[in-house]
Amino acid sequence: MANSFSKEERVAFEDILEGFQDLLVLSRHVSVYNTNQTEMARTNDTIWRPMPYIAQSIDSTPGTSISSSYQNMTQLSVPSTIGFSKTVPFTMTTLDLRDALQENRFGESAKQKLASDINVAIMNTAAAQGTLVVPIGAAAGDYDDVSLCDTIMNEQGVPDYDRFLGLSSRDYNGLAGNLSQASRSFGNAKSDKAYERNFVGMVAGFDTYKFDYANRIGVAAGSSITIATNGSQADFVPQATSTSVGGQINVDNRYQSVVVSSTTGIVAGDAFTIDGVEAVHHITKASTGQLKTYRVLSVTNGTTMVISPPIIGATNSPTDAELQYKNVEVVTESATAAITFLNTGASAINVFWQKDSLEILPGRYAIPADAGTAVMRATTDQGVELVMQKFYDIDSMTIKYRLDTLFGVVNKQPEMSGILIFNQ
Image 1: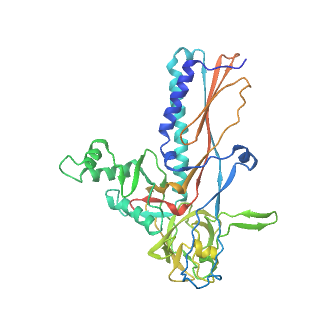
Image 2 (image 1 turned 45 degrees about the horizontal axis):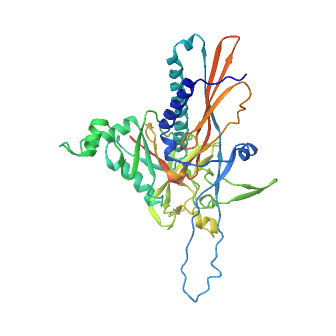
Image 3 (image 1 turned 180 degrees about the vertical axis):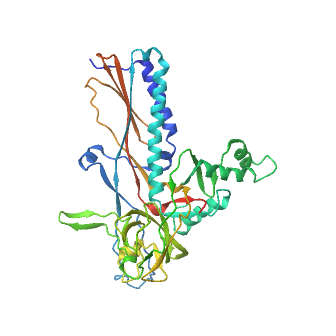
């Protein structure tokens, strides 16, 4: 006969789920896409999610034909994979169960770890793939630091709502220290909270959160590296599909393989700008006057690396897709444009993003209910499922427990997320 959960265990599981949901800080501030699990099983747990369209407008006068001005629209998409399968297994003997609190302690520890796994996966994705880079020369300390994140987003047309900023403990506390001194006389709510609770809250349009862990970025070791911006390399052509031996396949347009003078010293995560290549507003296509920031995704060989975002200059007989997704103005074309690295000092990576840029894909296990194992499952408000299983081994008088969760994380639009790094 299958094992069954006691009432005490069910109450414990409900408490675990409640705490698990409370700990999912980051998943509440990214978009969620619930997939059809049957279809996901048939597609190796991968689904292509659409990026937002960017339309182009033209001048039109009534009575004048625009028959030659109709444009083709290119729908770009990115692969999203349910690739994280996390579990916390533990055992208890019948001697351990004499102390009922032990089970609760194990459950508490398990939920903290699984919630941390989800938060870390989201943070890792934002830290590794966010392409809006804001380097600060000094330590964290005032409003201007965060306002620069707001500025770079506004200049490039990122929606001005649902913006979030996750700061390492040291950088968050540095900002709180500044706020606590904003008014020397107490009674200012913002200053009082910063002083009494080390609380920052909303700053420059961002809801801020403190991380007790944070990724780090090292010192860029590449030097005197150049890249050609006077040819096709600066005119990446976005395409929805590509034709291969097997027919048409979708294309991931978030990345571009580029050739540089040397990749010596370059590592994944490095941030840089290119002389003469300025960012544009994604809707108006007007130059911001500021150099576009890039991230290194991987190094292929001694002269080739993969970067994000691609360089879409739309300068030489551009296609409709190039005009639609143009993201830079190549002000000065050069065969040897200098690359300037932005991560000049080792630092914690603080991440900022617009909600629609990051997405979590909840998964689901199909666990048989009649295989001799007791199973309970529940779903958080974000759609993330937590499964608890219990099995009793009569030979050893040992009870096996495991808590599981299945999910995926994707950065659909790296140009709507970025990193804030201090001491550069």
